[in-house]
Length: 45
Image 1 (tube, rainbow, N blue to C red):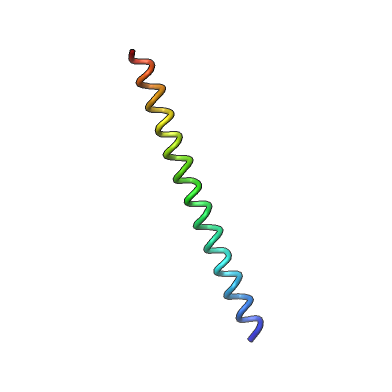
Image 2 (cartoon, one colour; image 1 turned 90 degrees about the vertical axis):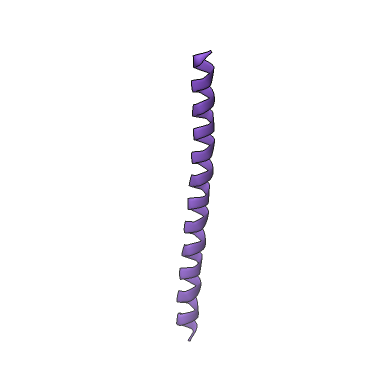
């Protein structure tokens, strides 16, 4: 019974960490896209 609970907790923790990593990648992607578009606009002027 304890092993089953620990396995479930480990799976849940793995899902949480994966979700946080994906969220961080989305934030980094949005920031990179914004900075790139800002620099490209600045070059045109």
